[in-house]
Length: 296
Image 1 (cartoon, one colour):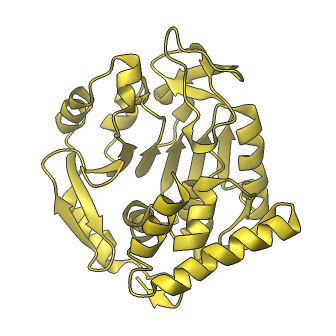
Image 2 (cartoon, rainbow, N blue to C red; image 1 turned 180 degrees about the vertical axis):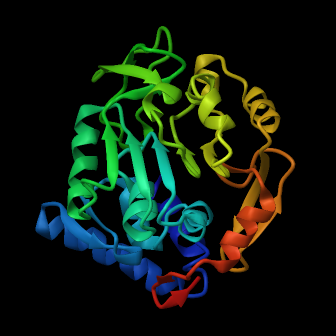
């Protein structure tokens, strides 16, 4: 994303759009401050969660500029999750969603991150939030079956399993297993899947997890990246529908689920919900959270 595009995103973000100059000032302070410091810093986030962030980490710095980078989906996590829940973070990266669910929301979690260097950063954030016992971190890729895959590295949130014939200057080979096997006896209430187009094998290896009655919602990135592997997102939509899920977007300000009837065309993520009355009731009854003096 170019600097101009980033500034437009920050100014138009739902949390910032009524005070864009204040948001752009946060951007400027971060850019100047991190250059002067020349090292990573600890950022005090929402709901008491904290994270360690470095210059250039776009997935984390977006939360500094906007409060919640992926506002609707991250707010859904905060409004839906409860302390007795299990939260699965497939493609956890350095743990943004895990921190929201488990540090801010108090849930138990399993975070799956295949790349060793990124996994180390994830562990740092878990330790910072004293989640060593509350979150199981697994340094493994998630796919259809046991095996090994080559991943790109050094691409921040864009690291991915390499497609056949695809090369990378910094490829890393990692173990891969199925979600059903890695889940053990844990039954999640909410899953986030962000695997840069590798969603099809993830779901192929998760029939038992998807069938569990405790699972009420899945946040899945569907941005067309699966084409690099020859996957068709319409197949994923049919699989999820067969498992009883419908597609929604979420309005955190009104706490309303909005039926989409297909993938979310306005966001990289699509929210899948099963047992809509139960989920809607949870969203309405949840405690609020604050961002930049605003309550949601």
